[in-house]
Image (cartoon, rainbow, N blue to C red):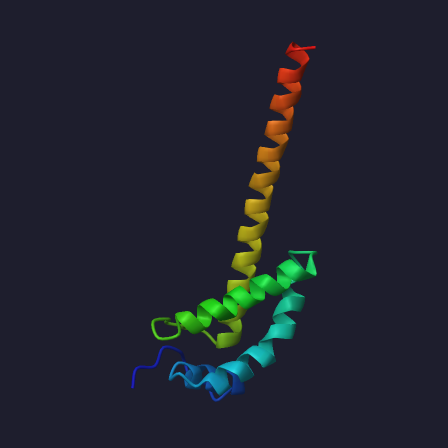
Length: 117
């Protein structure tokens, strides 16, 4: 049987191992175990609760979709933490770029407006 994670007899690693075999109940248990602490962890990066929850849900959705092809060389706990951190920083980066764009458009519009006054 192809195994794509280290199996260390931790409950969460057991749930992940079972989930890779399409065990939806095990995946649900993994979700219930990690969803609250991952949302709390995301708070280090994101203030908005809804965005934090969306990010963590996205991590789990991607995890389920890619479960057959993922190679996780750490514990599932470590993997999930890194995924949440990466999505949070990507969100912040996109948000920063968006704010820079809005600022540049506002500056451009105010600059153009001065020429027509």
